[in-house]
Amino acid sequence: MAMDTHALRRRRARRLRRAVRARSTRPRLSVFRSRKQIYAQVIDDERGHTLASASSLEPALRESLAAGGNTAAASVIGRVIAERALSAGVKEVVFDRGPYLYHGRVKALADAAREAGLGF
Image (cartoon, rainbow, N blue to C red; front, side, top):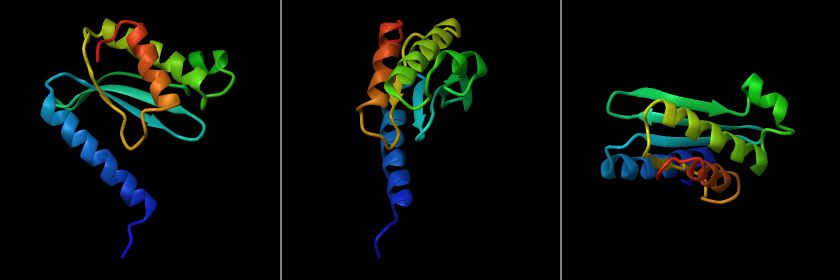
């Protein structure tokens, strides 16, 4: 019996997350993208706490963004999450792209976070 696309997506995300957690003691920068928005969180898996978060739905950011689901918005969210992580004392993270390819909005977010001073 074939698995549906959602089950395959969850499987890819679990496989990547397992590899990321096993290889590092650094916090994890997790990315979620929907068709219209993009979200990022810096998560401490040992304690189970979110250290910093940013999304294209935040009122302050939403006014400055033309749309929440494009690479320009992803770049803004990447810079914001890096600033918030650095202010929380996090300098190095492990990038968790979830089930998404490292391309387009996911890549734009990662590149912007790196440029803003967050180490991967």
